Length: 118
Image (cartoon, rainbow, N blue to C red; front, side, top):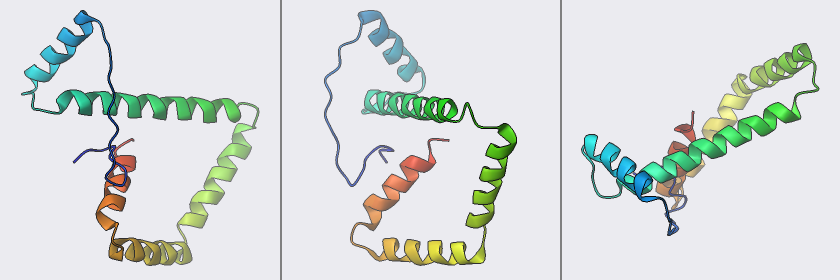
């Protein structure tokens, strides 16, 4: 499964890298028993990790002026809200609708891709 495939659509990139980078990556992938598509998956995973890092940095910068105790209180409040029975019931209702849709496979691929970012 392609972890970044969203709604079954893929984009084609043409990249230029140094010869040293090319050799280093191909050597690494070969040592892992490389298969067709490994370079694309490696690049996609690296891009996803960097996007996540930048998102975390932006959130940290945005919250730099907030009192840590207040920030912790806000997080605890939101966590308590998503742990309620009503929230779980609504999440279950929505997930059942998604599973029954004609785009269920593509939706699940997106969920799997997002879930693998941690």
